[in-house]
Image (tube, rainbow, N blue to C red; front, side):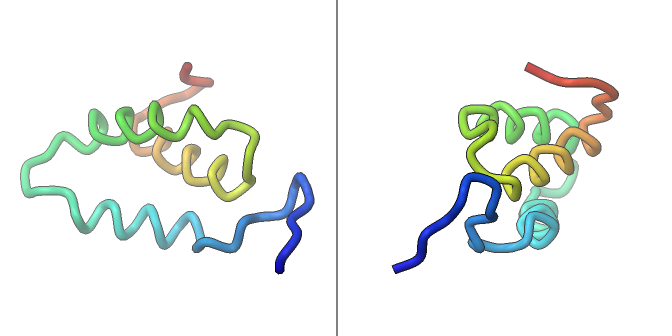
Length: 71
């Protein structure tokens, strides 16, 4: 069994790898900024749960062109 502390990552994969995989699976011609916003909304329910999720959400925010916090 593994025990995780509050600030320890889940070890489910590097956020950058997940982000690149997501990018590669987007259909040709997709509006990546719009799709990134959708992913951010999905991830917002896990806010504060895992630092890897926070990093992934930051990557999506960067792609979406967000300069500040998005709710």
